Image 1 (cartoon, each protein chain N blue to C red):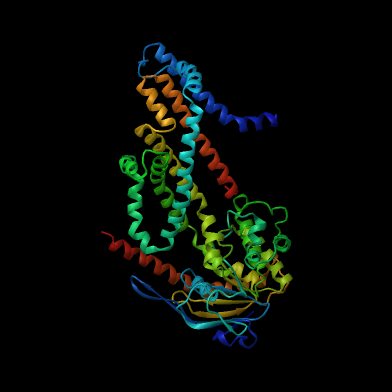
Image 2 (cartoon, rainbow over the protein chains, first blue to last red):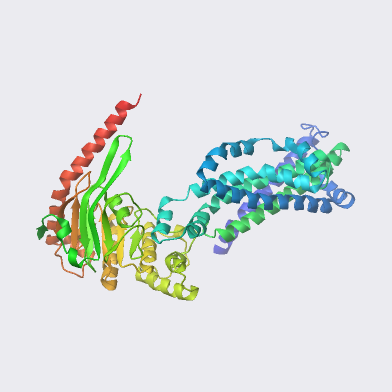
Length: 256
Length: 285
């Protein structure tokens, strides 16, 4: 009885999620077959399923997946290093924070993808342009959340450190940074979403490289089923990065 | 029962380990200069348990921060065994009113924190931390995180962490304020037991009369704003004590005596708060 209950708790949410997705796909299929949804705008889920083999065999989808994955990976690495460091710097230098925080917040909501012609001029039509576009798009939330996390450290925890005569460096690494980590991870997740959207978006716009280019090509050929199949690989990249971030967060903040 | 007259600075100063001498602390506020602590002097003898009690707003926490070295810009001086305090002093271990365990560390890692900062090797600090975890009665919870513990257990972790730094003086600011009365009494027992075992000099700041009488050898009663020493009461209850002492007749007399001193101050505080609320209401458009 306990075993059944444990299995329900463990697998229940996953089964419900998958079951819900299947139910939606079946519903869409029925609506398209019944003519309630135009099949020339939304392809049938069964057609998308059948197109996977074609997309894998003929379109080198795994090579493109890997290409997009690499661009997104380097963008996220840059976001993490530059974003967290800048957040720490702005937290420590009050004048600098007051001078720039509004601009950083504005950057978070700006459609940076429109800057792609500038990046093309600077870096050329290459993977570097795509990575840099992803980096710029995902940077602001990491900076903002790092500042928020560090500023939000409870005063009493800092006082514990001060009462134990911690140096400024010890205070940062032993108290401020661990206290800010949950917020930093929220920023990283947001930054990752923005970066991935921009990486695939710029691949699409400049017709270069990975899954974005494939989606562009398939859409231009009016291969709607193939387009949706390629999009599902973009979702897969997102899932991979989220799983990785979740693992890293569990490792760094085991109490959560 | 005896009531020691003022001034407090004359009480046992010659053999005191902690001397607070003529402290005045003022703050600038939008309504002008506020004197939080006004010419407060007190001293604590080695192994003594001194309680400081007063109504909200009497400057108890300001005094706590001054003694702990977390506040500067005051008149007067604080010294520990003759050594003037100018910033956090290694001989003073502080326990705060707010919950102060590190949520990202397990119980054992929380308690071992001061030893880690002191550079004690890992195996050695874990062994010593275990001793203090056991001392506060948290055996078996070493690998738990604070979010898995009750409020009382978390305060015991804070206590063990402070004790692990082996301070000469334990300075506590209303450590049980957020706990229910029963837990508070039981934790009081634990404090008494530890104090007896370690012969720990302790200064407890509180607004709870029962807690102050249960734990202290002497109680400093403070006035409402500005905070001054109103009276010092010697608590001549037998030691070792437990929470059972709260039902004794002598205990009741001490509580009544201190309340008679505090009632006037608490009433002043209440009237002051009410008038400030009224004034802020009048200012609001």
